[in-house]
Image 1 (tube, rainbow, N blue to C red):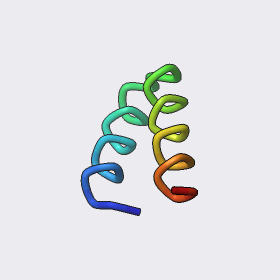
Image 2: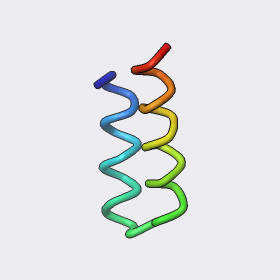
Image 3: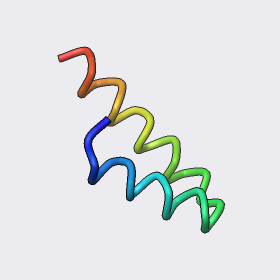
Image 4: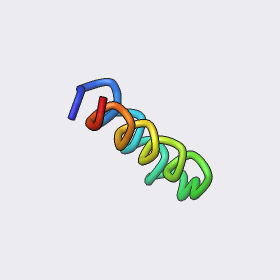
Length: 34
């Protein structure tokens, strides 16, 4: 997983920001599949 994505996910988890987490997970999914 890219460093920037890791950091974004950590911040989202700390804020318990479900929408952001879902968005980042989708980002990672597309990133990995491309």
